[in-house]
Image 1 (cartoon, rainbow, N blue to C red):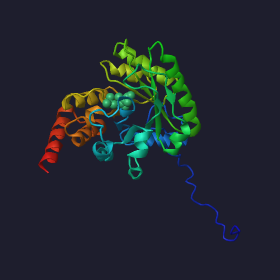
Image 2: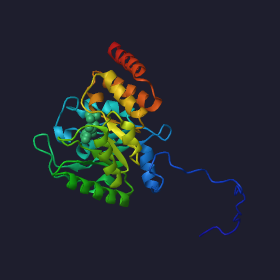
Image 3: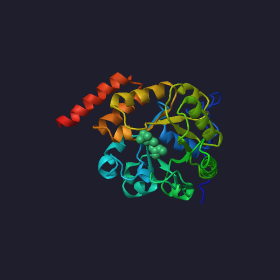
Image 4: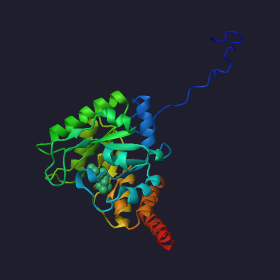
Length: 295
Ligand code: R5P
């Protein structure tokens, strides 16, 4: 029964004090519902507006590629340094400790392996993404691929509809068709197509002229690292992308195929969140690697 005596009138209304400015820290996200914003704030650090996603979803298409033979041994120890984990559901359920409490960007399309051409994709049931407490789902789009452009855009479109219902952001992943020129014109087109079809985040590749790709994309962009590069070059790639306006990296091979993956992810973090210049970040990488080997 409600307590009806001693009901106190409110007194502290702060009359004349305007409510705080609730403008969201990421572009294109102001009209999102609260749950979506909460998930975006788990992926992107609200203090810097940036993210270091650790990508280890490669096995869903490549199998046990170098560095990912044992995710439990090689990748789990890196997770504490990541802002967000990007992986497929099988590895998440079997290997990633739920106690880590890290946001997950769940790879949500499937249907191809390296043994065949790109195949028709299927998209994960959004209820499974909810069960896994995903903070975002990632769906690939093959812009410019004659056969798979339409079905993969349709996949993204449907994923966005489902994500909207559940409050789960969708990351559009731009796959590069074999015949495509990897330049800012192509990535500008691919990123924009993802965003126009409703993607809340776009993952693409850094190229010269990347400022144009970022400017014309109304939602945050993160870059994939791509094939393994020498560490200094990978740090330069991250630095150039961030300087051109990227909101972070979704990096895999350049971290887990490094000789010192723990040192590398920390150096990448310093570039992304602190704007450390590549040469300094490389120094940091070397000193952290030495510390590891001298232990
Ligand atoms: C992309 O679709 C892949 O599945 C990876 O998540 C992505 O390419 C990032 O990894 P990497 O930095 O190794 O390119």
